[in-house]
Image (cartoon, rainbow, N blue to C red; front, side):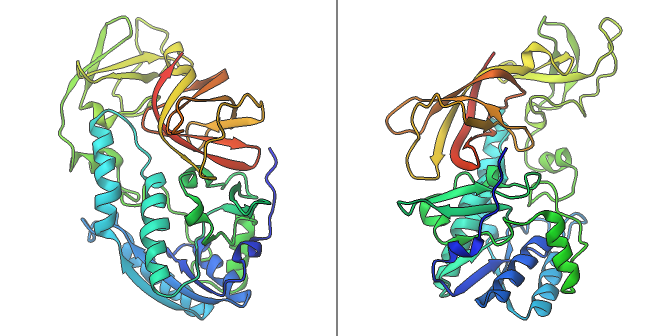
Length: 379
């Protein structure tokens, strides 16, 4: 797969005043430094998006702010702080809980980018007199001959984050810069060490931003009711009890509480399906069980980077991801209506654990076209 390295300065388009979202991590810090080195007027901005359990052992907001402040001091820029916790709870977290209660598995990082980092943050930065914003995402932007902003994969294929950015529109992308999208992660850390950033060796954050490193199931227990029910095989044999369908996802292996089955082949158990009406979790043994494989999916709430759907396309260059870490899979895109807000994808090769609630993101080579929320799958 071709991952070009583009000149990020082309996306500046003559702008001089930029606000950088600084998280306290090495990526956003090097982003700010590269902008300052390019001669721009740079202001750092730290976003606080969660405060329900600010004193929790897993919450690192205070330390992240201190790390961002220390980096800004070395770079020689001003750092401001802004609180988007109310917007986050209303626009992202409420949807997150609704989706889990409905039996789906949402991706809040996708919604956070569209609603907070590139909407609330962008609006705030523009109100402060910024001409554009910048973040430490691994992605790139280029403009085609018609002036349309294209979202391009990062040069570092292993760190590419276009999957999480696929809902960004033209108004957002045209005022955004990704200054490290042309770099390998190793080069980012080398720059940080060379210029003396105190967070040069800081571990990358993992997991959902408002959950951090805390146990996911324990976190959900605070907000969702525990409604136990049976775990059954596709043949209807009861093999265990689940604690509530919201706490499981398709393809899940760990945390099922099922050991080897003496009546079976002893291979691991996986979640195949959720029967919401019967409060039943369908499980089976084997990573490649037919119930985990799908050749087709339906997606809703589609969003297209260019502003319009590519339509029904049979070009074999189109690929898709149905989860972030999944390799690109060849697909056919089938548009379902004139509004272009629904589509189907057909895959020549069956895809593993296609999960309702997750995003199906479509690419044409290095260009991210957009995507939608998976609502159904077929074998």
